[in-house]
Length: 382
Image 1 (cartoon, rainbow, N blue to C red):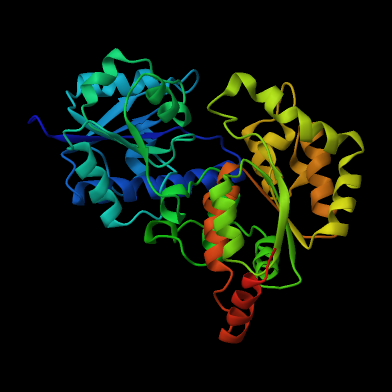
Image 2 (cartoon, rainbow, N blue to C red):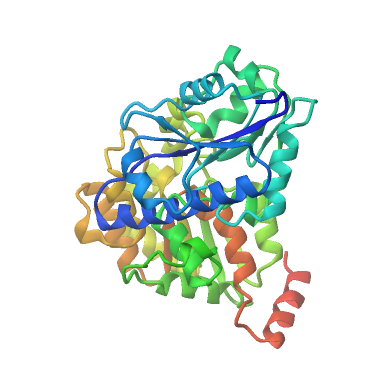
């Protein structure tokens, strides 16, 4: 490879066999195929996929990579994998993308990532400095001498701490959206914005009523939306400026994955207070002050040692309380399901890329009069 050759390293970890997990996996694989195709078109010289299920993926991907990198199903270390790929493939520049990240990226976005990877300044371009899902890394060989994180979310923070110049892309729908939970897939399906590769992913009859109710609330001047979770202030400000409803809520748990060791301390304050009186009481109180709620449940329920499986978390997102094995998550989900206001549950993307999507999509299918009425309301909001 030449001195400015660019390689792409994509990752995909296989999920469990429950319907909820397979729903998300099918969506991630569709996005993974789209990344392979688009990165090649944008000028990447080779594409490698690091996965614990290469034989399975060979029959599932419509676009196959040039190289497979075998990883372990348990104990996966992102940093060691990335170093190994850079070394074994002799990469001088590298683009990293997780399989569910950036499903709405455009051709120009891929071209920008490739151009940055060739930039002699050596700057690292990230979709999010504090929770990285994809990155463009110039001078990739220097990674071999640096300490890298076990999970990709902490990549930007750790590189910055070691003196590497890092820059985040502007926060918007394309750079922040990530498919990590069933809710993330359903949001795209509810507004028919999913890319071509995702249109073949069946929704398995999952209920979209909560999404529709939240979208309706956002266009009502009298609507009140309550938000909770790892919300960036810039994202919240953007969201509030583009919706007609009032917004309130709590920001908590930011850096939950990047600073995993501090998670219990970060999340204890609000989660403990909510759970103390019982989740039914919490939702009853919430219904008195809000028309709808959007909750990032991971920090809300990550108090102490959280033993919930991925399947249980996904079932909670879908309000399938009776199928949840973890007692605490079951109680919370049952209360959310039975609440008198619509509740939308999910992970970090719901209050990150999800807010950008909801803020843009809520005016679709609404007439011009309501759009103008909503915008006029924004001028007078406190």
